[in-house]
Image (cartoon, rainbow, N blue to C red; front, side):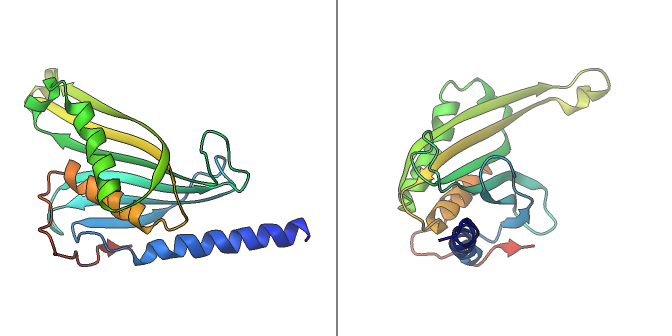
Length: 193
């Protein structure tokens, strides 16, 4: 098989796997937008940003980025040919800044969401960061704000990436402070642009 034919087959396979993500149903508070993907990390990639708001004219509660990478050479740190790289950020209540468990809680929100969605994964890595900002001078009225950032990557156990996007969307809603959906309630499709 020629390398052009092999490359074309891999590209078609990547497109089929990623196309399944278009049918993922997230909560209506989540708005997904496809954006340019990083080009130098892997031969194949796709990226989406998400914003979470309680309603169409409401302020943003959380935002994030979901990136799918595919490298048929299976880079050693990935432990596979696929890698998901994510970012989520939300403003929290100022009193949470001093909570020593905040990082553990943020990481658990992600792993619990993956487990609940039955999204098998390996080689997970990430950080949970709290950003404390205090306004001074002309910004004194801003007071103190606290943001939480969850940066994570993992290798999916198989090529069905839909539960991974569902899990990440659920974690994004959790970090935004939205209450969980009751058991048996299926979210209507989120807004896509």
